[in-house]
Length: 488
Ligand code: NAD
Image (tube, rainbow, N blue to C red):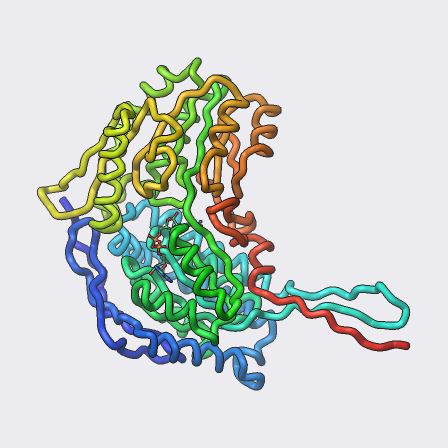
């Protein structure tokens, strides 16, 4: 049974310069568990985006204004207050996220929204610790650097971790003194809009964060706008390339967190029970709609049959269920379109000759119209196949058997992406040796899918550039200025 939600969902407006305003048109945001419309949300036109950018610019440029007058420590306090408000409203926000995205309430309540609180608090702490340096390189001059905010940041967010990835951008952007125009994904705008209310309640001055809901056109307007100094984008590699091209005309700063096809490598000398669990959460957590999903599984031949037997059993036991049910561990695919993409890849895997050992089908819960797909495992995959090379972004695992370390290191790196990787072994030389050889921004050893606000996250190769989280992220939201004083 799909439970009825208790959440009251109002139509969404745009937040521009501290005012909630109508857009020029609206679009529907859909509950993927039922296929029903949750509410209508304002669609920002290029003119709306322009007004939002100008509001952000005013809030940034106004030297006597409330944002510039705040001390770094007061900016930190505002971020901390925002974190408190998110925490206080955690249940409601978690439910909104689950309704809009289809992810299990278990994930929203215990992972996504608590992590938003962590990230905001982490950057609240950084606000007062951003500084330049005094550089004593010459007798005839006093020289030092200033670290200044970049200006107006356009933040473009995908649908898979809507509020969490928003916090990855807002945290460092606001801690360093920028202003922001935020564009949530059109599939999942609701938690960003709720955050807009909390930003006002926390006391952020008008225009410091503006929210323009809408689709690719709103994103493009932001990317092209001459009043935007930096685009912080998370999303697909193909859109990332468009954004780079679009930002070139005004030479905006760009950071890109893009797709992945992360290898999860299991050696025969690992704790196999733990590795089976890791392979399963690596791909089925978040319905596989995780940029760092362990979607390519490499298993050493010596243990292949035993391992795959256990993994397939485990996968068959995970049943897609009502996302609002606390027991559900696999929710609904975010949209009908994304579900069709996933089903097409499953078909392609069969066509190319991979062996389907678990799942493979759409599931209907209570005969409803929700977008559910079984946890799916392919074995006997070859590295050249589409399901081994392309990002599926769904609960579909491609397994490849290997003989030795050199062979798997080479195969793991034969891919355009380089976001994450994992190695399962009890041999520390092998583990650390491979960690160095893998071309990926994150390497997990004997674990999968761990994140921390303090650990930088981002990609090698076509998984993008720049880093989010950690101290590293702050560099991408600041400019360095060298100041010379003549002492001669
Ligand atoms: P998407 O690229 O289609 O859309 C992402 C955002 O960009 C949305 O807000 C969308 O409206 C906007 N957009 C679309 N076209 C645009 C354009 N031409 N100009 C400006 N903005 C535009 O991605 P998606 O389908 O929402 O998300 C899935 C993708 O995101 C996957 O490829 C996934 O790997 C990637 N992702 C990466 C990370 C990471 O940290 N590396 C994290 C999460 C998701």
